[in-house]
Amino acid sequence: MIRVSRRHFLQGAGIAVAGAFAGAGVARSSIFPLPPTAAAAAPTPSPSTSAGAGLPDRTFTTTKLTAPRVSIWTSAATAPGLLFTGPMGHGTNGLIMDNSGAPVWMEPTGAGVTDLRVQTYKGNPVLTYWSGKGIGGHGEGVGIIKDTGYTTIAQVSAGGGLKADLHEFTLTSAGTALLTSYPTVQADLTPLGGPAAGYMYDCHVQEVDVASGAVLFDWTASQHVGLTESFVRPADDPTANGASAATAFDPFHVNSVDRRADGYLVSARHTHAAYLVGPDGSVQWRLGGARNDFSIPDAAAFAWQHDVRQRPGGLISMFDNHYKDGTTGTSRGLILAVDESARKVTLRLALERGGHRGNAMGNVQFLDNGHYLVGWGSDPAATEFTADGTPVAEATGIGGGCYRAYRHVWSATPTTPPDVAVVTGNGSSMQAYASWNGATEVASWRFLTGSSPQTLSEAAVVKKRGFETNAAVAAAAHLAVQALDAKGTVLATSAVIAA
Image (cartoon, rainbow, N blue to C red; front, side):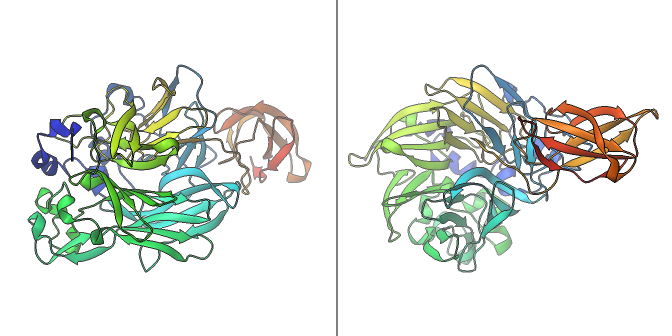
């Protein structure tokens, strides 16, 4: 079996193992919240990702919610839709933005959020994300499904007493959810130089019925993947050496699951491999890693990967992190043509941009217009590429890092009312402010003033500008706002406040 690897720069597996946790502050430490000091310790981004760095977060008059100052450039038309992100360490952990970088929706509770995106449930578009707390390089929480009014319609937990991990929450057309989990178990770690009575994270992959919570599939990594396939060792990191449950070792680090007709495509970061797992749990083949079953050209080899996805036409995509701190290499989105019968891989496209290096996290999204969106993970940026790999847009300064980034068409009208605030002026005028967290159909704002709540009348109509819109109006005792759509129809009215 030919095992040609682009990891030549690592000087063999020994250095790859030694560098496994170096600089993995985002991946190993608690992910939520990530303070600015920790974010500053992340890998040094390329010059193009520094836009917005060091700037204060966006603040508003109508809400206490804050968001990072994301900068966006475009050189040509992008795919339609908004950007869905999970900034770390800067304001909200779940953020939908428009193409200018202005917030559209900021997760209002301050909960830990990853994998914010639009999926389909029961034939309808829904907003989904994982929510919980970071523990080591994984998480413990649940999957959240919200409708277009931002009402939670389902909460999905892992089965068997396990906690859903932050790495995956994918809905299927069958009304099920794909989840991962990282339970701590006792294990003999001597094959990797660790303690005989050691502790490790034994990754599970589950498929759970959303409506009933029934577990339809539960796969345990250690039952099918050998410890010696791992490119990390207990000695690499004293905080993850397996000596105790508090310092559990992470030999597999499963970070994505995709459903196929014949099973599940599972990515394990620490084995540098993707696995086709059959319905009975058996491993049908390994793509990459120490026991690779495919002929892989040097230009297509990968390491420390995330977000491995089955695509039509025999394609497999992934985010090839490709490096850890202390090594060299550039991260990239990879699209591989995989001939499973001949066990041969061909590089279809590599998506690289400006030396981006995400040592953790990251993803590749196929967009409906043929473009690709690459989220650079701990290098806090996202780039949109055309079908031939030409970059046409980029967002930078997405907090201290962003697990995955997406672009989706999304139309939403919150069930909560708009927010209104006022700043008094010189006695004859005042500044009125309006916002509506998550609303996508607002075209303009009508400001209403009056001497009492019952005598309000129109004071001004102003075109919507970004997340929050303000207008100077004549001083009055009471104030309210109405959100208007493009036809001037009232979508909702705020509460009346004293000015």
